[in-house]
Structures are given as structure tokens and as C-alpha cells.
Image (cartoon, rainbow, N blue to C red; front, side):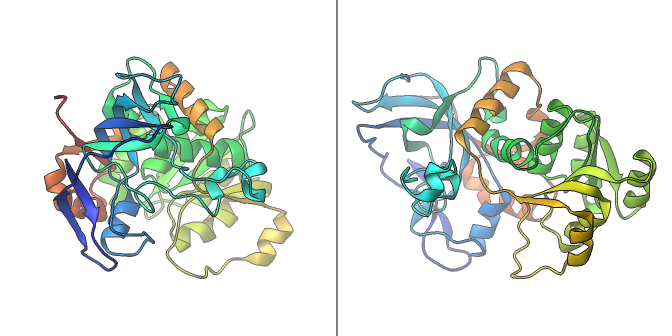
Length: 347
């Protein structure tokens, strides 16, 4: 099979290579990948800015069809269309796991980072991580289930949404756009997706296509707009999905007293300057969010089944694996939301 492999530590150590089809263990399934989405972290791996354990196949957002099931697998069969959580090898026994956070287990070996991922024709995975895709959902849309689960974890688990909340999402990338839709589906009265001039052509345009209010922070005073919208109180919730220091600092100013901040974005910096005293005096609740848990995937599949979250508008490109470098370069320029690698449906 053809696969995109991180060959060794260091930048530019990516190449398409021919690899043997993996053999599933007794508790695993073999999945034929139908669609795999490119995340910004994949681009960071290309430049060696994200930790990995090469050599390995990269990629972690996918949808596929089960080709083979291990001897101990029940509940799934050949032909099932599935997606999968990204918590392989979480031990289930440490304090982190038993308190409900296998996504943070030190033993976890996430696909595409510490074990072979989905930028390949086939992928072997533990069956316990699988979720069946609701009928009628296109594979390209289902390939974005992982970022949807991440958004659900941040919005539902970490900060929570109350009926009537005013929510601001900073960063209109895929996770930001999904988080905005989750907030709306969870009962928010108003959701504003904020970005910059660079985001206008596709990302903010996509937000408007999804029926979401938008703000360009380079062309309008977002803080004043939120004050007017809330009678001077400020937003109930801010979701920081940009990983940009100015956005993080603005989040504090946007929030009302006792407001909630959900932080998803990674800055790539060891330190970020914050108005600490301002955060204390407002008694803000700050919730950092990373990866996702099983119940987030269950809710994500429910959202897909009922059409509460739209995925296909976020798929702004389709490609074959051999064109990976052009795809990564396009994402790095911010000229796409999600590009999906696709494989022909052949045996």
C-alpha cells in the first residue's frame, strides 16, 4: 500500500512509501481508508514542530470501511463505515484514566503521532475505539469527525453552554467553525466567529454560509460590538481556537465577569503574557481542552445523524496522496479549511 511516512526526526522528512498492509490483532480491525483530512498538526510534523516517534505513517482524521475483523471483535463487521477515537493504548488504570480522561493518559499512543496513522490505504486499530458513521453521511464529511469530537469536548465538557449564552469563537479554522456550530446546537443564543483579513476569502465566508455571525477583528471593534450586544456585560463564553497571542489576550477583555474561556489553540510558545489581575478580578473560569473522550464522539455522531452540524462546507479541497506537498503548502498559507485525501473505492 502507499502511505505518507515521517521517515526520521527533522524537517522535510516526509515521503510517500510503499508499505505492507498491516495485520490486525485479535482485538483490532483492518480499515480501508476512504477519506483522510489534513490537519495543521500534520503540517507542523512536516516541519518537525510537533513531537512524533518516526518512522511512522502520519494522519489522524479519517473515515473508512472495515475490511477484516480480529477474532475477539464483536459489534462490528466487514463493510461497516467507521471513524475512530484517537486514544490508542490509554492504560485505563492510571489516575488520569480512571477519572475519565484517557485522552490525557501518559501511555496513550495517538495515531499519526506515536503509531501509524491514516494517510495510507489501510489502517489497523483497536475495535474499542470505533464509531459507526450514521447512514447518509458522506465519507469526506465523516473524515472530520475527530475535529468535531475535539470541538464537542471543549464546548460541552470543558466550559459548557447555557441556554441564551453569547459565545465568541476566536479563530475560524475547522475546529473553530465546528465549535461554533456545537455552541449553537447546545443552546447559545448568539455565536460570533472572529477572524482576520486572511480568513475572509474562505473561513469567514464559510462561517456565514453556515448561518453564523462573523467579525473581522482588523476591520471592526469586536469588543465594542460584544458590549453593545450584551448591554455592556461581555460574552458569556469565548472559545479560543486560533492559538494566536493577540486573540488569547483579547479573549480576557471580551468576557463578562464570571465568564468562561475554553482554550483549544496551541501557540507554539512556552509563555503568553496575560492580564492576570484582570482575570482574577473578573473571576473567569478558564478551561484548557485537549483531544476528546468517548462521550464526545457519541454526541458528535448524534449531531451528524440529525444534521445539527454541517461538515461538507469545511471540505474546501480534495486530493490524492501523491499531491501531499501541494496540499500542505496550501494549508500553511491559510488558503483552505480542510483538504481531504481520497482513495478510489476499489477492492
